[in-house]
Structures are given as structure tokens and as C-alpha cells.
Figure 1 (cartoon, one colour):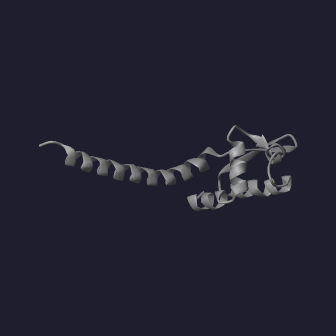
Figure 2 (cartoon, helix red, strand yellow):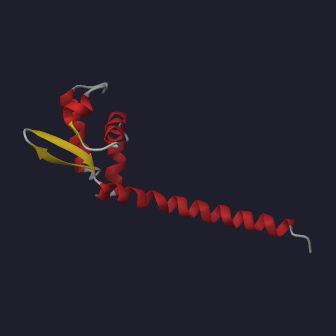
Figure 3 (cartoon, one colour):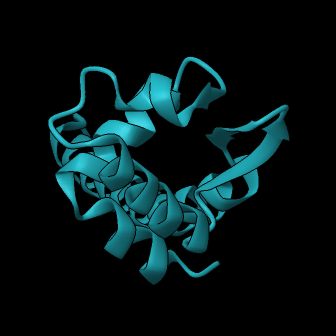
Length: 106
């Protein structure tokens, strides 16, 4: 999974809703589709895209498929995002230290 595929998959607001619905744990397609602004077949297509992006995975439970967030795919996306956070925090720290040095009495 590349972060580009994950970002592309999450660009769609319905797919973000699907991901949010899986936040509390595994769910079947019918459960996910309840309350969604699209049909059950459309939710299945969105799940397919999320699965191809490595963000969700599924397992068979009897005659239905249960989907859940794939922690490995989410971790890869988070690692990519964290690099920006780390740089932003480093820049903030450097700026704060500069300001502190200017204000120190000599």
C-alpha cells in the first residue's frame, strides 16, 4: 500500500464515512450501509476501493463479509503524515528557542 493510494481512496467523502463507521469495530456491509447516503451496492464498491488501497480488510462470517480497518495500511498512512508533523514541531521548537534567546537578559 502506498500513501498515494490511501489518500486517493480517502478523497471521496463517502469512503471517509465508511472508514468512520468502522472506527468502532468490524461491521458487515449491510450494517455499514444503514444510514449512508448511498445504496448497499455502492457501499460495497467503496469498500472495494478502500480494500485495494490497503485501508480495510475483510473476513467471511457465514454468508456475509465483515470489514474492518487494516491497522497496517493505516499505520503506513500515518507514518507518511507524521513526517510533516515532525518537521512542523521541529520548526516550531527552533523558532521558540530563537525567541527565548532574544528575550533572555544578559
